[in-house]
Image 1 (cartoon, helix red, strand yellow):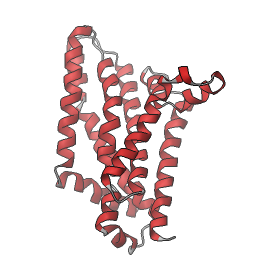
Image 2 (image 1 turned 90 degrees about the horizontal axis):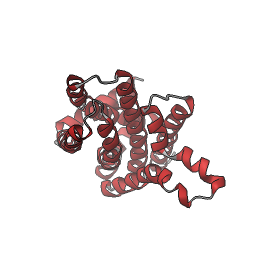
Image 3 (image 1 turned 135 degrees about the horizontal axis):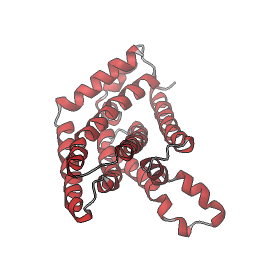
Image 4 (image 1 turned 90 degrees about the vertical axis):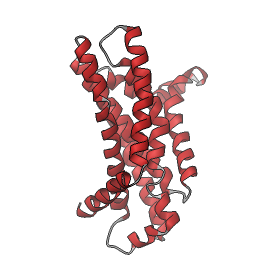
Length: 236
């Protein structure tokens, strides 16, 4: 646990020692804020439906941008070899880096609370639905981020890591929108694989074990594959 905490602090600090965190934060808030405010008064409803609709789409581009450097940069610069000389497990490196990036995503979401505060001042906002929506956003971001960590662990090129993470994330995002082309016998399987399906259920307040198992499985499998990819690099 101590090793994970060391990696977490080192990685989280590195986001704010460079322009990465500030650029991601600025563009994320600008884009989400534009769509949120432009639709708020058109809908004339005191809720965050527009925000909960646009952020899942933004995640597909922003989360791979956050995760692409996590392992790929260290592999390219050779600093990962230095990490291998310390008594740190591969899984601890992966989890520490994952939690640091997850912390940045949490900060992104916390900044969007200004929209929730604004809506609550305009009308009677459903607090339970707002909490469910943010929980769904957090779990979706955590799932996409785990995919991004895996993508970053299989290459030294950050651009390739970004494209691989974006492609896998887009697959899980779009899969429930192409059910018309899927044989009926496989439709339920494809629907369960769709991240949007579980996101919408939780955002509506339906927090069932199927959705939680889905997100935690995605995170676990992706981080496990990332750890194995790192082990192969080390030659274990």
